[in-house]
Image 1 (tube, helix red, strand yellow):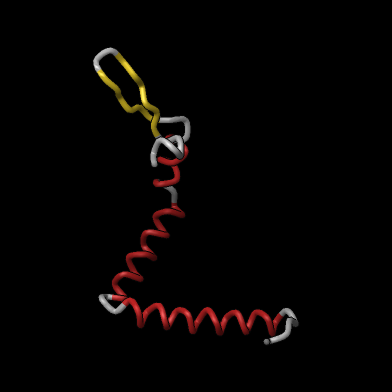
Image 2 (image 1 turned 90 degrees about the vertical axis):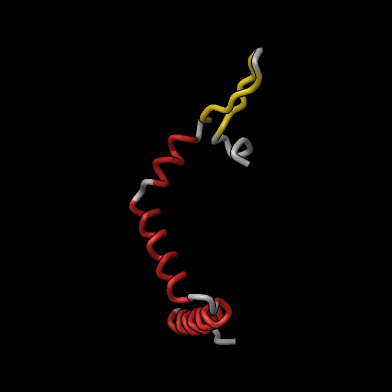
Length: 82
């Protein structure tokens, strides 16, 4: 998978093969260190703590919120509710 997304390259030599960083590796590492990624990680940790073994109930609750927000958005922009 890393090879497919250009994060590594295969280098062949007389003594075998090696893997070196690919062209996209520096950008990927910067992304991992970004404020956005840290915030995303914090939110994922919050969700994992909130779910705490009852994922089905948490996802059902999220589905209800998303459905409500979708209905509110459709109403605000004047789209039909059905």
